[in-house]
Length: 212
Image 1 (cartoon, rainbow, N blue to C red):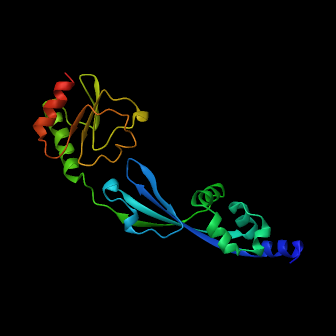
Image 2 (spheres, rainbow, N blue to C red):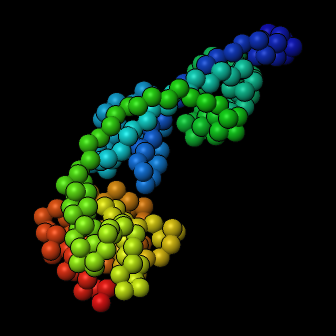
Image 3 (cartoon, rainbow, N blue to C red):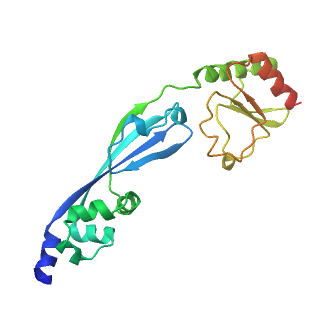
């Protein structure tokens, strides 16, 4: 095959590469937890690490002319004498390279809900509401927010580690079985840590003691 014929063949043929991503989404964070050319299964998702998250599946079907395949693969056209374009794509194009191409070209994927995990912290979330109600009662207020002040000290009550980039809190109170952001914000300090086995009075007393 002449170089001219080879170039014409490259320009004419189009192939499609499919890639899949899984994204864990909650009100607090969004993380890509899976990227692969293989369709994911539930075995690819750590359920304990993603309690309370909605797992979103995105499938991207990327149409590429062969010259783009060769460029992404970092392979010369001469290799077509020895390998098919499909083999070149499968052997040389890595997931992160194709995802960079998708992002650079604003290619949209087909999105669907892959799984919704029940909240492990359901009991603790209920306890948080009870603690806030008791704090409001003891402080003679109509309500107490998850971010509020006691004696001029900013106080945060939540079921996950605080993101310091969102601002400093004087007192950070965490009530949870599973801290979804513990690894992400491992450098952040928690002043008081509880779970659903603690009582409302225990938690409220501890909060009032540290803020007095």
